[in-house]
Amino acid sequence: MKKLKTPLTLSDLKKLKTGDNVLLSGVIYTARDKAHAKLLNEKTPPDWLKGAVVYYCGPTPPPPGAITGSLGPTTSGRMDKFTPQMLSKNGIIATIGKGGRSEAVKTAMRGRAVYFAATGGAGALLAQTVKKFKCIMYPELDAEAVYELEVENMPLTVALDLEGNDIYRRDK
Amino acid sequence: MREISADKITASVAALCARAAVNLPPDTLGCLKECKAREAASAKKIFDIYEQNAQAAACKKIPLCQDTGTAVIFLEIGRDAHIAGDVYAAVNKGVREGYTKNYLRASIVDEPVFERKNTGDNTPAVIHVKIVKGNKLKIILLPKGGGAENMSRLKMLTPADGVQGVKDFIVETVKLAGANPCPPVVVGVGIGGGFDGCAELAKYALTRPLGSKNKNKKYAALEAELLKLINKLGIGPQGFGGKTTALAVHVEYAPCHMASLPVAVNIGCHSHRRAEVVL
Image 1 (cartoon, rainbow over the protein chains, first blue to last red):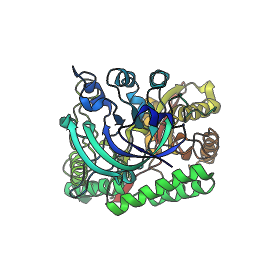
Image 2 (image 1 turned 180 degrees about the vertical axis):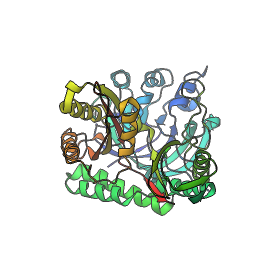
Image 3 (image 1 turned 60 degrees about the vertical axis):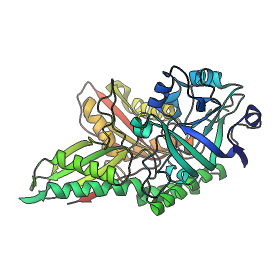
Image 4 (image 1 turned 120 degrees about the vertical axis):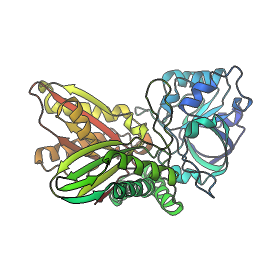
């Protein structure tokens, strides 16, 4: 199992092949449908986006005494419309979600970003890898706000590597 | 006439919301175990994660999945029961309490197109009412996640499309859904009943215990054949490949217009959560 730590660099990504299981540690940021639309409407992109790992996730509220609630991945395909711009305008380096990506996203990612799959429907388990959790943007969106997470050994699978190999292709 | 108070309905619905979000029902857990047994090593590992997740959720009392769903509620009201007060308000109050007090996610927006403002408490619920024999009230809660719901489809086939057309449409729907709805999926199918009726039947089909069969032998055979065809797609758990693309296929049917053959396919995820109570 490969271990990765944010901030990720292109040379980190070059070592990854589709199908690899990795353990990610460091800081990542949640954003889903509404946060994407808002982020791309900002006049100047917030600094944290440059080189960021974006996690498509809308967590449940943390119960008292817990760091976070349940927080598994949501369907990535809904963010496909925004992803090419998130790469070109905002310079994100990786995304985490579940399910396949569009051809446009694959083309935009090639050579510059990877896509990781987290286990859909395993939000209770994934919550245990989160050490810090705070809202940094759009608190009015509740579950759809941007949260900064510090994760430790978050289990992920490389779903699209730098060469564009796709784990979801059934004819491979 | 037997009296059932609105307060009792509210308290029961709140308790169902809390239970369904955290505890995977025994039939779902059992089915996941059975399917795991026939998988190869890599797919087995994903089933292990599902089991570990169910244990973590039950032990830490946090939701199995961050998508705690739309609260879809089926009420089967006995015709000899009398509910004092507004049954819809009582159910929605229960959903409000169940979701906010148990830190479940509020996922409902007030209108679909313009502002899409979150209502903050997961109301309103989607409520289906059926009047049945007896003096009891059965409440079934199906917390329905958005990812799997989005992969559902409905088509008005023609009588000439026949059983082959029905099978093709259902299998194609699961194929197009691919990895998106968190496979292995549960496939709820409604056939007949018109445009509205087939969709409600498909949803209701998802409330049936996994492994149950349609009482009509022809439809039971159709369920078994569809499960085989769908599992041949090879999508597998999380879409990474495997023998289990669906845990079950449940078909419900109703009479329909002689010109029509409506088919609705409602997809449910592997975290197939339900809870019910009889008052």
